[in-house]
Every structure is written in C-alpha cells, then in structure tokens.
Image (cartoon, rainbow, N blue to C red; front, top):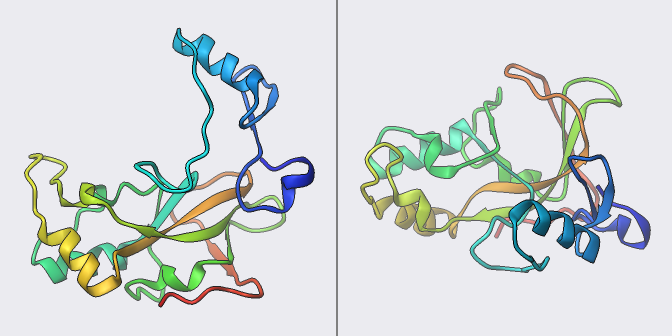
Length: 183
C-alpha cells in the first residue's frame, strides 16, 4: 500500500503485518517485527537492481511462454518464468505484455476489482534456463530471450487495489498517459 507524501509513486510505502498493523516499509518498526519473527536482527533495504524481483507482482502471458519455447525447440513450461500471474488473453499475441507497461490491469468487474500498476518489463536472469523437474540447464532459453527480446519477457507490477483473482476472470487493461515504449 502507498501512504503519505510518497503515495504518488509506483512502489509500496507501507505493509500490513500479520497482526494488522500498517508499518512503513523501511522503518525500524517493520525491521523489528520481521527480525522478531526471523529470530535475529534484520535491516530493511531498497535495491534498485539486484538479484531480487523488481516489484511485488510478476505477470506473463501463456502466448509469450509458448513463443519462447518455440524459439528454443522445447515444450512450454511457465514454471521457468516464475510468474505470480499467468494470463491467457483472447488476442494470444506473444509479448503482448510489452504494451501494458505504464498502464493498469484490473481483474474482474467494478471498482472493487483487484488491480495492478504495470511498472516495468521483466529482465530475465539465468533462472529461466533451469528445467523445473530435472534441474538441468538449458542456456538456449535465456539466449533466445536476450537475442529476440532484448532480455525482456513478461512484466512487473505493484498492487494498487486488493481484490480476488480467479481462473477465467475477465481482465481489463487501462493505458495511462506517457506510456513507455519497449525499444
């Protein structure tokens, strides 16, 4: 959730603890809460880049997963891409997600529908090379994403409205002004 002066940004500023408290994301109170649950002190850190996902939600379309698999000559396996949300759209265009950056995806109908702000393209790491069943590496997967898509497949987003997500739910896309282009 976003609160206070930083509420206009695209990243959360506060979190709700299991006990229901809303704490500042990088505050000492949250560090103490997490440290208490972990059993040792922790420090809350914001990384602009690094080995972690860049936003709280990752999404990819089944058409994108299928296209990458076809480029490599493997069967499609969405688990390689570790998305929070897999989308099967009526368009079924590979890399359709590129056009969503800067916009909002709403899941379901009405003002109470869950919604995410699509913030960035998902730059892929070597994890896509690992077969989820065998653990064997297939470097061709990442090579294809780098070669064909400038290392981008899927998108990152942040939750802007909580709600229910379900298989088969209607998805609505709302572009926003100043949307960034892919290349």
